[in-house]
Length: 157
Image (cartoon, rainbow, N blue to C red; front, side):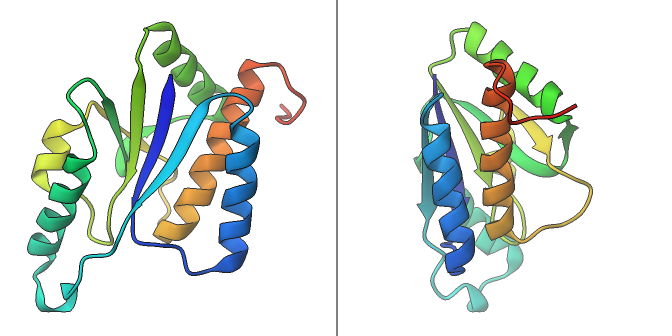
C-alpha cells in the first residue's frame, strides 16, 4: 500500500521541516509514503472563502484517482487513539487497498466536492493546530502506528 499526505501550502518553518523530514525518513522503513504539497492559491486575498476552498478543492481532486481511498483530516472526523489508528491502518492494508490519500485542507477547510469525494474523515484533536504543525503530527502518528503494528519499542502504554 502507498500512503500519500496531500497538503495545501508550503511549510516555512525550518525546524518543522527538519522534523517532518526525520519522520518521513523513519516512516519509509515501513511503508511507501510521500508528502505532496499543493502551492498556495495566488491572489487568494481577492477571493471569498468559498472561492478559495473551491479552487483548492479542484487542485486536490486533480491529485486523486478513482481507485484511491481519500481520507480528510477534519475536525469533525472520527477520533482514534494511537493504537486505534494503527488498527485502522492494518484494516486498510488487509483490504488490499493500493493507495490511501490523507488530505490536509487549506485555512478554510474543504470544498463540498472534496467532501463528496472522500471516503472518510479523521480528527487529530478537538483543538485547532496550524496546517504546518498538522503535517508533523500526522506523519509522526503514521510512524507511531507502524511501529505499533511491528511491535517496535517506540510507543508506550
